[in-house]
Length: 256
Image 1 (cartoon, rainbow, N blue to C red):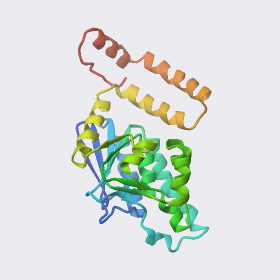
Image 2: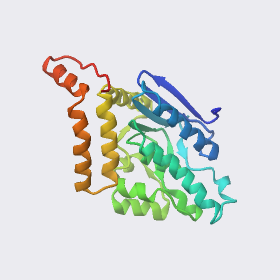
Image 3: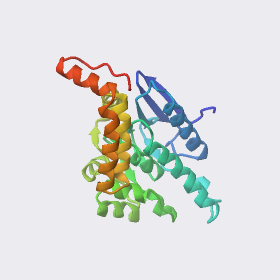
Image 4: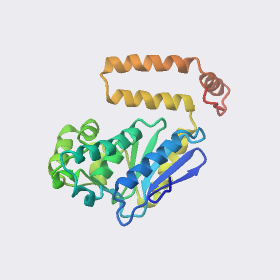
């Protein structure tokens, strides 16, 4: 697929996926298709351990969807549009590697939803978030925001479409770290590389367990984790990690 809006660069075991659709990186159908393809390609690359998702420029991460596409959508075509976009977001949420979102500006509507499905969100000062779909007579990301933010805050964002700044997003749990703009990618890559240094097998398993934790009860989640741990206990990476710890050296992981 020829890439027009989504670009991927690699730095060691870390891939940086950048959304570039000036002026505000609003997502249209083609951009969603390219985003899915970029993540699909990275899922097959064993050399990539962590992905950083960000937007181009200093104005916006993703300032929502391309509203021009809404005009012809109705009760028949609208659900297909929603299902397609949700399928891309769910693919990222359940991606087989950790995804860090470096929020470099506005994360509005569908952009906020994209940030919410990432594992970790690091925002720069000046970033802001909203779920403005209600202003278009529709809605979005209700299930994601309700599991991440305080429920009252989630309701307020969904019902009003109002924006909150990065500091408030940090306070209510939407953002995990807040840094200055000039430190955003530096910190995101630093964290990505730290995660990438761990056992690939353990990180993949941890990702599956964290996804499971969001969608099941505690008892079922604990059973799932116990099953996942069985494979880790018998792994070569576990043996190497323990030996390295006892020998006071860095482990050399092979992903088995």
